[in-house]
Amino acid sequence: MRTLQTAALLASAGGTALMAGLFCAFAYAVMPGLSRNDDRAFVRSMQHVNRAVINGWFLVPFLAPLPLLVLATVLAARGHSPGTLPWIVTALVLFGLAFLVTGTRNVPLNDALDEVGADASPSQLGSARAAFESRWVRWNTVRAVLHTASLAALLWAIHLHGAIV
Image (cartoon, helix red, strand yellow):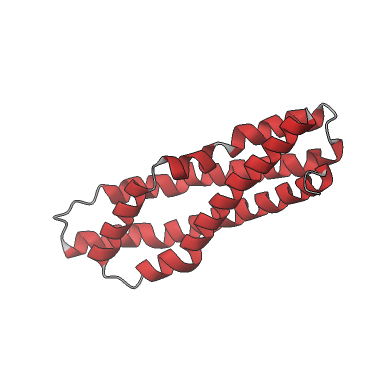
């Protein structure tokens, strides 16, 4: 069981690290770069990014940590590395909150932006961007912080677990 818990912790840390890195990169590089575009280029670029990101390279690290963290939590609660339990639960809660932010905040904004047609007028593009950009950036920053904090809790749990020698 210890090996299974180690694998679950390490794999969930890997996925969490990838999500933290992705959302942080959007916060400090991608969105500031895109913000320099005119409305048409901004809207089109975000539409392309939002369509392109739905792939296995994104979905595996986005989805896999949740069941792996649940497994690690159950194993810790059953006495396998019990000192890790509060840290694993913290990581699970933080990852879950970030997952909810993505699903309830960023994805609906992405979906609304996707409705803007290629033939949209400059005023429609400006309105769509105004409804999207600052809110999306704010919620992206929230999920970046949540994933980063989840990773920190996981790394501490791994340290306490003694998985890395």
